[in-house]
Image (cartoon, rainbow, N blue to C red; front, side, top):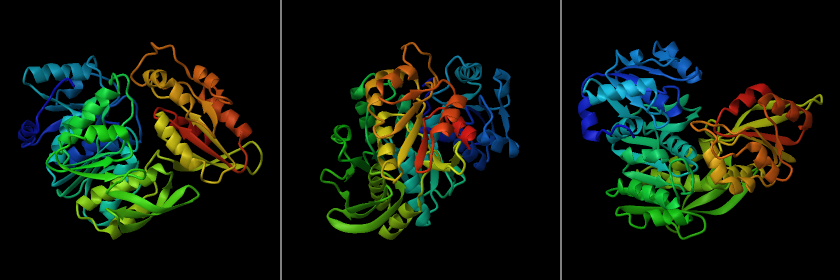
Length: 467
């Protein structure tokens, strides 16, 4: 990114009390880091574009949150932390970078700061992969909590057991989601590097799959003196880990693996199975989340916890207690249809890549509902354009309603649209507003249906309209 600070330099910077300003303080990860900084005795403030329950929590704690940009906001802070989502022409960041260059302030990339926090712990588990990071991070968190190991946790999704997306614990165990976007995870310091899967994604940054595999190779090399927990069923993960120099621990269902599953059964989409460790029965697990993909997440989580000496009983208990992270097939409530007495369960899901959509739907279609409706909001023009054909083939078995593409950081230079995607998918419906979607759903939903509101943008606003 725009600045780079080594772990050693950051240790020196934070050896004295600091006042820290977070640009993007309302994001899941940034809000977690801001709370951790506050708990460490730092003075904290920040900026975010819009108020949210996360920013309101800061304000209730007496922390200043600005919703308008002004370089003067950072005058009283000596450290500014920014994310990859903040462009260089942001006036607060531009001023902070000038101050950093002049030696007046420290302008620090979020990933570098997180890598510094991580480096202070003995067992440092980084969970990477294009899909499932938040879920696997949350599963591992539940396991360590069940084992009463007092972990420090930084996740990309909120957990009900934490009351947020982070937990400040002891200095033995640090569990974190390691995001690959713009190579953020190369700033982290795991000695247990988990890789769940590798797919083509983030075409606004990664030129092709070869670049992505190269980034994951470098991520794994950070843990060369420790462990790599890798998916034996994913050819791209196998390629990324083939030169790894540390201890490799594999998990999978289709290829020979150190951790696998046997005697798998499903009850309304939720799996029950035996974990097999190197040929021997290790634990019996009953999951509280749906989908075959969550067996893989559970195996990865069990392998990472086992490396840290967590017992099989605690692993089974932690996995059983996990019922999902926020916005990962989260049951939000019941939608009332136009017909009297009709109520339909509404699930909220963060899936925004074809692989994730197929995995979520695979579990949903096993839950026993007569019809599964999906309202999907594509996320970014570049992803929708580059993976257009894959998206068109990802909704089999569902009744699909498409909302407009969520632009995020982009402008539509591709000429792609949700309306065009709807025309490619048999039976799909495109509607131009959340109000129109809510009205349509109330007219078609009936008893025996399931509704999934899906996407990584602001589609969650539809939940409020429907509920």
